[in-house]
View 1 (cartoon, helix red, strand yellow):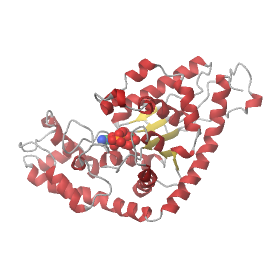
View 2 (spheres, protein in one colour; view 1 turned 60 degrees about the vertical axis):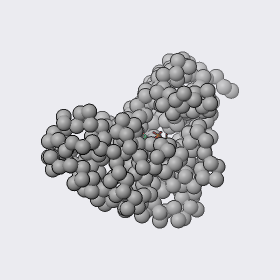
View 3 (cartoon, protein in one colour; view 1 turned 45 degrees about the vertical axis):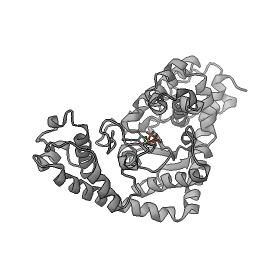
View 4 (cartoon, helix red, strand yellow; view 1 turned 90 degrees about the vertical axis):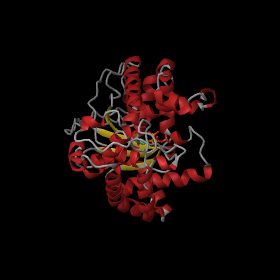
Length: 360
Ligand code: AQP
């Protein structure tokens, strides 16, 4: 659960006033949200429901930083001619979904070099054994581990730095990021322990709950919807037009049985469960309510209703995204201002971290 009552923040000491034993901790942490999306391809419905919807909601309740994590994107090959455009596209998606850059701090990760500096320190805190257990690295590399970049392997360490650089306490993400968040907590706890800094870094909470926490591929109900899936038919992109959405939903893999009367009837039917889950997430109705309406019907009836709902919800976002993307200079300006604000928050935290490590 999100804690909404702010706790007072103990200000960081300027380096020259810092006592050597630093026993002024633990620190009460201001509730602060950090999250990001990689500009590694077209944003899809999973990113929207798993992350963006939560970003919009949280900005009204807490201080929020939303980053376009371009340093993460280059852990896998990116076309340099496209990366900047994709970074702007993610920012446009944030704003089109309802993130207000006056309220939340929105910026590109590479514009705040403090992320990389803290990541190096954390590379020396995290243990190889911890990273060896990360399932996303295994999923992304498959049998080609030897050819993966070192950056892809240490990706979760950079993610820990992204979050802890601002001493963020809450991280809205989809379910696929749960393990990485646990690693962030382990790194925070080990740093605090190793450097006698009890409570210096918070142990951030993942905000995963919500109906769109795990959106699955339209081609395989057991694989998550992903930007990097080679099949465009596997996902609904935020920039897809109405006809494309209708066609993708029509072609989505399903089974021949009619829809059940209750959620239990969706067990062992991953594709049906995914489509019903999408209807529920987009309509705001519970899965049980959706099933009540469509029980006994085949996908021939359900799919057009789902496609209509998707178009109704996504079309205004798509339009706003396109409008915003027609003015790249404006997006760059908003991101640059956001980076300045982010650096102001990060600087004293990084300075304190470096002092604790023993750097002059
Ligand atoms: N299928 C999904 N369902 C729910 N949430 C999802 N997210 C991603 N896929 C789903 C959430 O979107 C946020 C941004 O993700 P990301 O782009 O930074 O990284 P990712 O999780 O690796 O997303 P993709 O789409 O699978 O990208 P690629 O293919 O480039 O790796 C995160 O909060 C994530 O949980």
